[in-house]
Image (cartoon, rainbow, N blue to C red):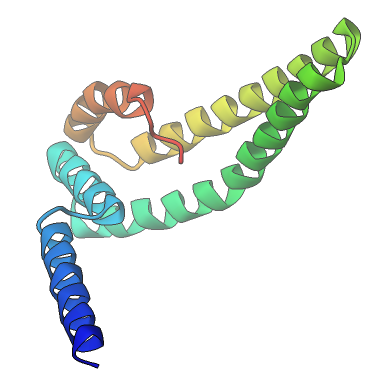
Length: 143
């Protein structure tokens, strides 16, 4: 019985230590929200603009997520074809569909940022124009 109590105490201490260590680092979601808030501040958006941008962002992601899902499915089927021994024409067909989905996603992304830019003042547009290429081209943005 004493042995079990010692095990439980040790596991609780270890769990507490691990929880304390993870509290020091911001979670992925908190970090992304901080990045977005910094982006809004860097452009110099007013609260009304920020509220509109948040609505547009939600609409954009609701619109784009199915396209990303289809692209992932197409890529899965492409690479599953490696071990199935699919012929070149099947692979080329899937690659063409992937490129069409990427074109659709990039077109919608460009339209989204164009829409956001129209809600900025001329001064904000100048800042917006320097920030957007950095945001769009950062690595690891889609998860």
